[in-house]
Length: 279
Image 1 (cartoon, rainbow, N blue to C red):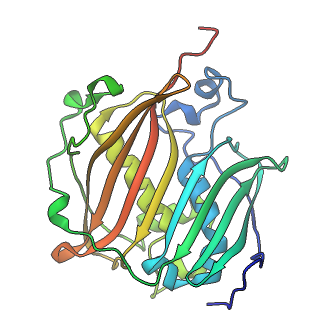
Image 2: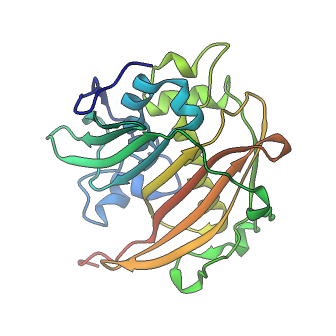
């Protein structure tokens, strides 16, 4: 881990953004679907923008941050497929370490902001506060409207096995991330993978149409092991309207074998977009 000083700018991360969601059921990632809501083209998924933000942090803090670091990320302007993107980071505190983040598009417009920290002590997380529940059948998912959402509603759980050599290899290509930390015999899980699973649990509990991931707050608690059986569980904590959009916030946690806490996520998304003015 490099030595950091307050005011120091970390090496930026530059890349060509990739819309890996073009064939996804969420048509906000298609040109046609995005155009219905006034966007210039298909939106690069928020999971990817989150991944871009994490790269300068991971380069600076390494495995320590992946095991016990935290990040707050908010997405404020789209990035489109093929655009040049630049993730920048500046140290704002040293004890404990804190870094301000921003993601700029090809025109230098701010597309995402965040703060990453490396806390000295980890919060506790009790698996009993996150009960397991079967996923609903597809035809029994909640409608995509805050009218049916109540604070405290428990979500159906996702159960999966971490496959770093298979699924995660393809995921790294989608994230345009070539860091060696995620490859080889000592590979660890990319932090954006947890956010992808947070999106998945929403899609498996709600009958979503076009929707947009807007923010995530994540606290890493331990490194997951390759091949480990994992459980993502959570509940609704907020439902609200903003500028005509309907949003929800969920409190999610990933647990490993023997209920070992891996990551805690507060995840916010627009589940129903405001109707476009022309139709």
